Amino acid sequence: MKTPLPILFGSLIFGIAGLFILYFGLDDLADTWQFLENAASATGTVENISTQYSEMGSGSNKTRNWTDIALIRYSPESGTTVRFEHAYGLIEGPLQEGVSVSVAYQPEQPQEARINSFSALWAGDIALLFMGGMFLAAGYAVYRVFGKP
Image (cartoon, rainbow, N blue to C red; front, side):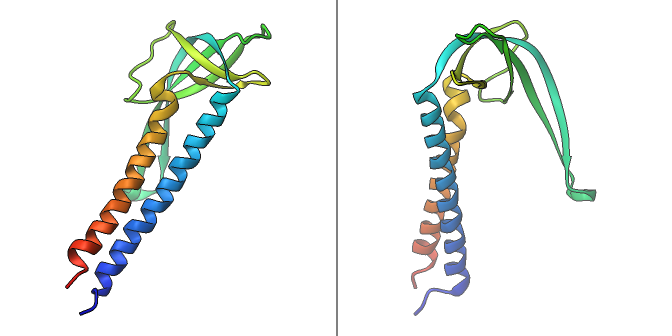
């Protein structure tokens, strides 16, 4: 007996989605790794905390989103003052104005800066890899459990 088409289709969708998510996770991981290879570090200060509000969609499908954004000031080796925005979330915990943070930046482009912490640099990449793996495993499990007669 053949595998029912809806089961085959469902497992394929989960598997393909997992592969795409894994691809983007690996791509982000490579970008972060490349960023850190040439990065210099400095100490920055959280100057301001603001919340950005945005809406997507319309009617009953409207999605509301609030994002906390920290404005961080630091001085790279060149001695100039650079400011950059960092959107943060629950994983990193709340930031407060006046707090010192470690900053990783590109010496040739000091405006390309990030907070130098594990969660700020790697948490998103790891989450994408985990979700991609889970989707891929779910696709395989659906096929193995329900796809065999």
